[in-house]
Length: 133
Image 1 (cartoon, helix red, strand yellow):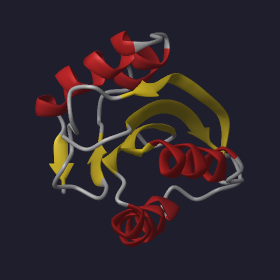
Image 2 (cartoon, helix red, strand yellow):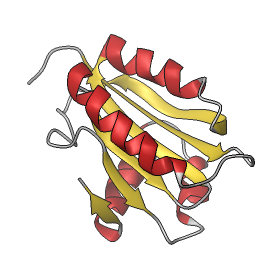
Image 3 (tube, helix red, strand yellow):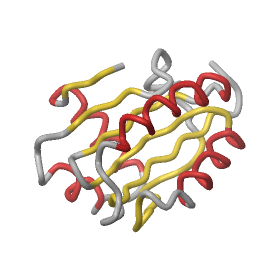
Image 4 (cartoon, helix red, strand yellow):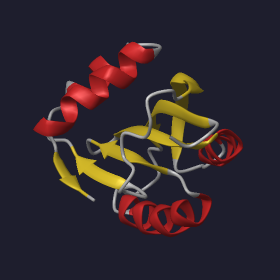
């Protein structure tokens, strides 16, 4: 198991002035940068809400979260959980998996959770999503 693994999950809403097609650019850029920083995870998008789970070395995850928080393409950045990851990576093979959700209730329900409950809920939802590694 890797030392000092850390994970973070957040939700946000795409800015009203931003075209949702920007998500493709976000995924492409994230996959390259995350490989370099040894960060793995998943981004779920439902057309206007985001939920992202990232995992990796603590400082790399926290640094990425700060960059994401300051990104003007979204608003209402809300961390649902962050902390040490004792069980190993959930997405060891994916620098950034992507899932487009067709369920308008999935992300609002997830965003109401805090702590590990949010992480477990996202993990439980993944089989129902159309994932793109």
